[in-house]
Amino acid sequence: VQLVESGGGLVQAGGSLRLTCAASGSIVSFNAMTWYRQVPGRERALVAAFSSQGNSYYVDSVKGRFTISRDNEKYTLTLQMNSLRPEDTAMYYCAASNWGGIFDVMDYWGKGTLVTVSL
Image (cartoon, rainbow, N blue to C red; front, side, top):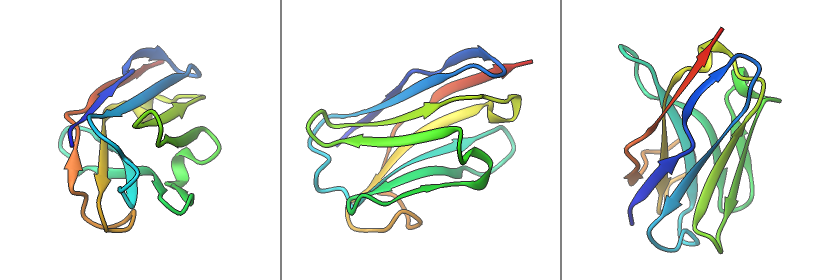
């Protein structure tokens, strides 16, 4: 399965972006689907995750601003990002795991989409 992210771009602080991760096949079998982000010089960090049981997770810094959702029929994972801040600037990656949980090692990764938030 291939994962392709889209929706990144340049936005002013306070604005919104909607990231979409499109899978090349069914995502029903994925136990976990996640969004990570990475800035230069730092490790990739988990931002939000959605499990096959319908549970969601958000890192504290994005709670109340970001919303993750999963559409098994459209083979997509989305991340709605509101009230964006300059510190949200990063490359955002979609990742999925066949059997692992949302904090486990992911089996599939996309190539990323760049989000830049200006003052």
